[in-house]
Image (cartoon, rainbow, N blue to C red; front, side, top):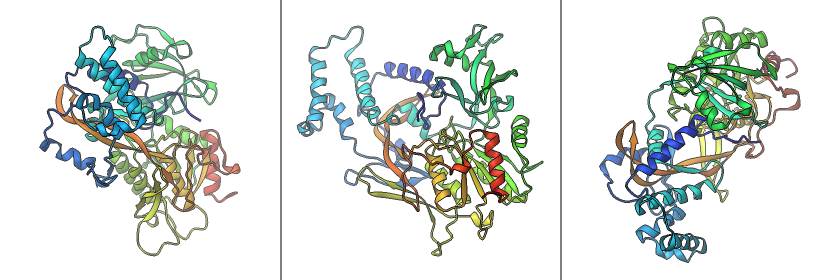
Length: 509
């Protein structure tokens, strides 16, 4: 099951399409070859190399860690051949028929192509970028080339304060525009929009930001690029369909400065960060027993900063409040969580997994990483603190994890660990089925224009390099997903909460 625009690394916001156009314009305005060797200051890049380690020319990977981030530098032979025409390097590799084919095309272009209205340097820049990106995107739907601007933003995330409405968008299998993410604390969150809401109309009348033209936009009859223009207007009113029911109530969202969070929780009066609308939805779905708390984690990576440390900190605070409020059992909501950083997912797992058979004092394995040759390249472990929050001697699981078909990647890694160690019961629907991981790989030094300031950065590849396997059963869910037992299948939020309460009350467990 897949969406047209699903990309869990860069979030599902259609706004990224606008940014892509802007980035392309930046490419066309650069004067240097995108993969050139000039203008590199080694000293300025020392910190960058510590974040994403350098390929040492011999080992396949130099596996170092910094600030909890994994990074790998690999030899990108095919990509090196894209620039062989310009640089005259690696000619010995032309014996490879596929590489020779690329070289032949480049020579053909150089010999005969007549390019109108472009300088040779600009044209060389464009087709080098396009060729490199085409190689990476041909791997799968997740791999792509990162521009120096994107790489810099990834490595050096900005503060968590932004001017936005806090919404992420995508299309479902029926081609309907739906809300894929609502950031906790955002204008959209406070307005009462929920993830999964289908957007039927956008009212941008009265908007004075110079973009909207004062009309109703019916999303089903509007081009994607026009939807992007309207949906990120300064002020907008939504008409939505929720659980297949068209709501009479409309929801007005106005962009503002806010500090968001990926964590929402409810442990009773005085122990919650929920808005009134979200709290009402939870409590109307079922009466939570006195010892049961609720946490929803929307992502393992902030959609604006590409960082997950803030979310992990918020989750840790929530778990401490869980304990302070006297809660013993947890409804853990991963619906619509499309993933993020696997190291953040593993850190969250430390609160929720416990290996009853482990006595050596070493960390608990959360996932196993295998490369394309099925070799184990890493076992991700975590130091469990489960015993500080839950009863390790309980006969029944103390956690219910909620999932749906938008729970993907790092969410599935965590779900697999919870199920393997039998600390949780899965309720909801089958997860998305993304059991592969991507790495950021530096290619060449370059300069980036970040907020009008020229900084040192890199061209880089974002590419698939491993499959995730569960820690005990050694299964990979890629293309399959995790499916709840028949009695625990629940399609909507109300039925999921209701079933979770039954299980944690030890009814039909």
